[in-house]
Image (cartoon, rainbow, N blue to C red; front, side, top):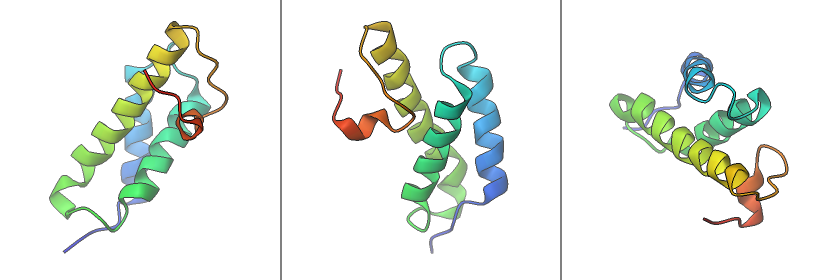
Length: 87
């Protein structure tokens, strides 16, 4: 059985990621990254894995974003990873 991640979980995860990446990643990028991860996982994961999977995917992408900026890469907007940037 799969589950659609709830919007309250998305809001909670945005809050967690904002705390974790405070001063390192802009609010809009954090929100868009978590929302994108939610859309990609929705209906594809088991209920007990929803929180962990959403957090892991979001964190992974935000770490890549932070690393890209630190290395001088131009990261244009919250969905920068669609452009094919790699480490």
